Length: 308
Image 1 (cartoon, helix red, strand yellow):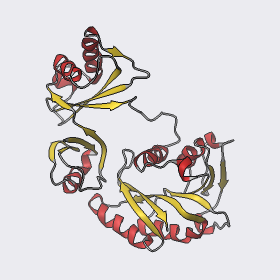
Image 2 (cartoon, rainbow, N blue to C red):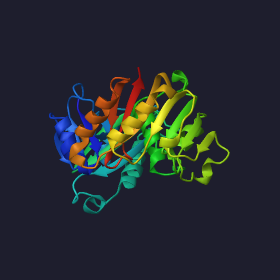
Image 3 (cartoon, rainbow, N blue to C red):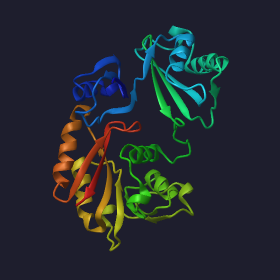
Image 4 (tube, rainbow, N blue to C red):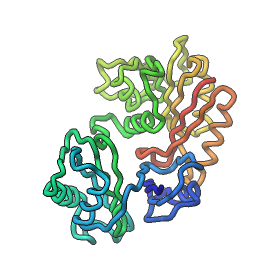
């Protein structure tokens, strides 16, 4: 079974190193046939290839007919990717054109489109003159645009990638350090979590009247007897310093409580060094380390760990 992996163009070398069985289809795009021997840290999206075909509307529609039932309600979501000289201008049409025209061909053949609540979403990745098609049950999820800053997207993505089930894990109280302007705090409060947001800086006005207690202090001056279910840390400081702050706060985190921390990488070639540095600092008190370069990460990684 083959997969398409999509990541940042700047991380192509890291993706190849991580997946030494991969073939480069474009900058930040790999085709791999085995995901069992990697943690897959650097890709942002992973698509199983259900079928592949040419890039014209009819070929795409005919391929889709082979992998979905005519009785189901579907929608098509298309992405055109690849080298710099392969784009909507070079092929003469864009992603929306493919979605509309391939969808129309399928409708003419008795298939049923539902853009709002499809039972199947068909992902079409058009990459350098080849279409790679993936069937996903349900609607293709796109993060809502209502957010405070990039940090909010990062936390949403972390909850998704690390499969954090707030209700099952009983996450009710959070400590967000280095919180301003409040992206992490906002996303947690929207989920009903009570947040202590520690930062001398100002929080966004959207956070007023939410479940957020703004503590206007530097984290070095903060102390509390409160026990939290999760600590989040997006501070823009060296990874080792960031990890040491988490260690100082470990008594305020319940057993099996979570830490989500951003590891700021000064040099993109040093991702593995900073991952190991943070893990070595925390390993005596924490376990279950996972790392991911999320779609809204830049020169950084997001780390999850669990208090022993």
